[in-house]
Image (cartoon, rainbow, N blue to C red; front, side, top):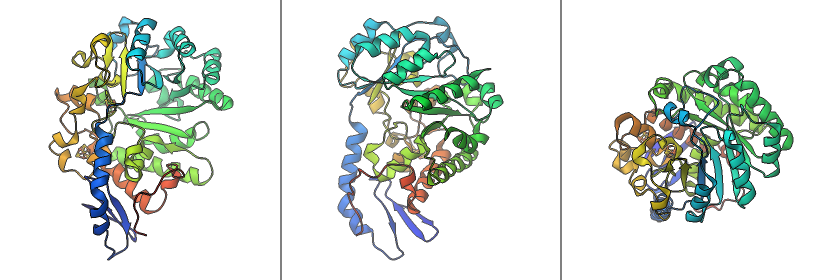
Amino acid sequence: MKFWKFGEKNFVLDPDSLFWAVYEEGEDFEDLREKVAEKLLAKLNEFRFTVDVRTLYLNVIDDCNANCPYCYIPRERRRRKNVLSIRKIEEALEKFSDVENVIFHGAEPILAREIIFEVAETFDLEFGIQTNCIDVTEKDLNFFAEREFNVGVSLDAPKKEINDALRGKGHFEKAVNTLKVLSDYDCPRTSITTITKINAPYLAEMVEFLSDYVSVALMNPVRGTTEKARELRENPIKLAEKYIKAVERSIELTKEGKRIVIGDFANIVLGFIAPTSRVLQCDISPCGGGKLFVCLAPDGIYPCGEFLGFNEFRKDLEKIDPENPFPEMLERVVERIPECTECWAKHLCGSPCPAEIYSEGGSMFNKSYYCEFYKALAEHAARVIARDDEKYLIKTGKMRKVYSFS
Ligand code: SF4
Ligand code: SF4
């Protein structure tokens, strides 16, 4: 059991079942825990181990118009400029017939816009795109707005010089302009910030800046899948301090009526409140890669885009089993990682990311470089819940109370 005292409030967490309670001194939560823990654990395990591929990432092209230093796609691969064929996409959608969401992804998908348009015209699915915006045109944005694409805009800092040092000259202006146009169209949109030691000091300011354009900002630390990306990783403890300041700023802004949520942190809060409805899939093990989504690239299929470039994780579409495309990913659980198995945060952290960890040591079964960061975030999520602020991060309206003291 993990116990905290936040001011006057006591908080207890059962790391195995994710039972938790905020309780008064002397109040007995143990009876309730005994009653519900088994059920909670069964639900959690069902959530963790059910394979249900509903999302298909389409890495439509290996080419990119930028050269971000932390890119997870190896440079040699980007130089090949290979493109996915419509035939392959059709084949994938036939095979993974439960797919409901298609997300066009990197390298830079807009460089293969004809394929995006054709797929969106042909299939009746939900679409999203992740773009650096450099070559996005007014016509593209009109199309995305009409089709209600969820557009993810990459932006790393609220200051041009910091952002462009990471993403290339001229990027800031393009990305901000795209956010403005999308806001005018009221098109579904999110921002995505990759955190390195260069932009980490500006996270709280970034939240403030983004609140003019988006209500959900995704902010996640760079995955060290390459040497260069590893050099750019912020120290996990320093990162946690800065990230928590950004979380607090987002809560203040939301209280002031300018709703902005850091999606990755909200997902951890959801890990406590409704663990099996978590949307993002990096903070649970096995993670969502190869379980809830797969990534189709020009040379084959991968559990997640972060594995691009690791040939040992590549499979041929023709041979893959859609019922369980990557059984090896299901084996990658915190219980098989020495320190994680004893950790109170194991089902709120998941020790991400297996691709990053594999790239460092040739095995997925090690703990995350960001371990202390995730622990600090999970503790802060408990603090936010103890002070009743979770409503500023997640929509609790449609949730059903499963257990309570009263
Ligand atoms: S933890 Fe890594 S491999 Fe898993 S879903 Fe997240 S980014 Fe992909
Ligand atoms: S990486 Fe660290 S915080 Fe995450 S489960 Fe493992 S020991 Fe816990």
